[in-house]
Image (cartoon, rainbow, N blue to C red):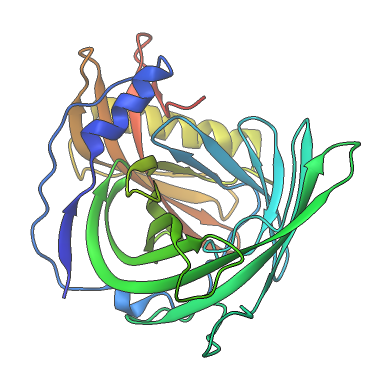
Length: 316
């Protein structure tokens, strides 16, 4: 059965204010719906090169490459990292201006009963357990190696409201333990949770807590921006014009359609909820559908009208 969670949208948008973006003061209630996340989560998330995910603190990350078992990302700082589509694993390799490292996943040696190292396909009650073997260090200096133990569980399903919209999700929780101790005496050093939405193929809410249970980071999904790889200038202009006109003039659930003549490119944009920001400006949720030559993609997000009366996705 689904539980219904208020995701802290008002609090999360205050993070945007810290980055001189915006603050949102709204309250969202969620009416009960039938569980539908159970139909998703059978396979690992699938990502497309060029897609960008924007979060509630203004940070963002773009998929810059995809292989069968590896996704390459670039964040708003320009850092590059590679990780599994299974987001319960941390990055397999990373590069910043000062540090680099690699990580591999192996079965835990301290477990009395061997468990799977992945939760997929998702099912309530699924558990996994694994060890990270990490090698990292400052660029140009000798690297150090160490091990970190984790255990994960699929808690269940719940419907959550975040900035990008309302979604049926799987709730997943992982615990990181201190090292070099037996399983009976090991203590939890960190807890991470994700709400994975099959409709998006990505998590829409994630939170990290320290050993005392205090939240150290909480992110909501603000928007998913479509890949523009291979999109002509004409189609880009049509997409932009429809986006601006719809959010400025259309009522809730009133759809605008567009298409590029003599091509298979077409799409729709539909505004959803409208909210007033703390500084008096407006924001709107929307659903954007784009027919690429190889099929339909659906993108969810929230945009804000700036002082020039343009609708933008607030990000760093």
